[in-house]
Length: 496
Image 1: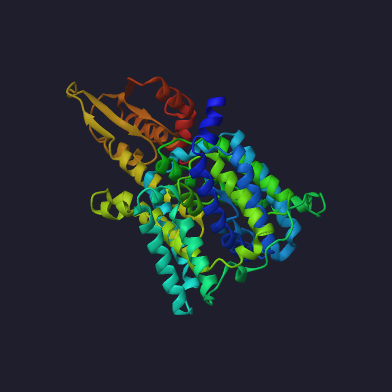
Image 2 (image 1 turned 120 degrees about the vertical axis):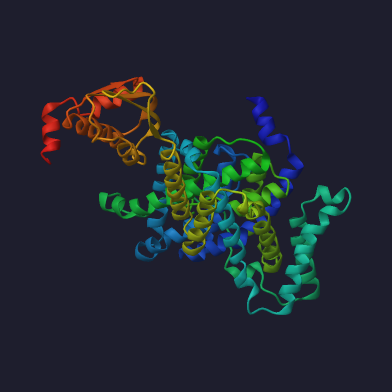
């Protein structure tokens, strides 16, 4: 226990503290922007980011991952806030947390193993594109100072690490933000700043129970929103955890992450914040800045609230160009460039899954929909591929009066039709033996196909014998097969 605490909290103190500071600075404009998207006061997003980041540092399943208010979640709240107001949003946030905790206890985080690498890659690339395009409003219809500062920020980010010793000690995004802010103030450069994004809170969050009637009607109003928020939040969090796992070469506890996200959202809802989840952009900033432990996440949350409440006069003066430079760095670092180079080497099906996932997410800005479409396509391609490996061949034991068929491979819904087509039902033989030693029947569709084969042969006057069934196949055939039930066969032949 103590070894785990030391490893997750105290093994990387300096880098975690500096990385958390960088993340906190980048969280401010995003939290404000996401609040505006959801149609609520900026304080709702800032309080949510503080609560979620602070709580998830203790209860999350992925050290070093940043969770806060996000755009994906904010998009799902717009209608609820517009039609029913902030209190219903807070109630929906509490229910979202409960649903996510339930998912953790049901161990639904383990379902991530069904998400293929192609879908994860598509998800990552789509997010990189969305992060980059989200910066474009800050780079359109602006003065040349903004472009110059953004370019200078990128130069600092990529060149500062090359400086011996110092370049490795201080995260370059932090240097970028401090230098550009100093230059902007010293020379009085007129550029858009964090203060222009919206008003900042001047008090710490307080306990706030949603002022909604505790009725079934209220529950039915918030349930559809909470269910959507829970699914999107867990999907984005678990996908981000997978990405951070790869970046840090470590493993995360996915079911604990589900519970942790739920607890964090409940706390956020009780202190006036909206629902949130893991943020891939901020998580990448954290990792790239050296953050690896839970201390970096806690630092991000604590520094965020300290800055917006006590240092707001300084915070307001940070030029948005500095933060845009940081986010462009994140988008470049997030995008899987190797996936583009490997397009000509990867199977066509994998490329299609990745491209479709990217396209759906970028067009709809709906991460859950993109992942769902990607997983569905990957499943269909997999089923088609496995279905092609099933063969029915004529055995060397066959004679003029006795035909032996050997079935090899997996028989299920995708291979049931080729399975039926492989038999010659017009052949005039007295006995048919179907050897299933090397086959496995998986579902009701495959059993129905076997029933059809047996019944067709018997209708032609042949005796049919099934041999070599493994235990699992025999169980499913005994349960769903009807070829040995005269009444059911009669119904089948009679068209019932």
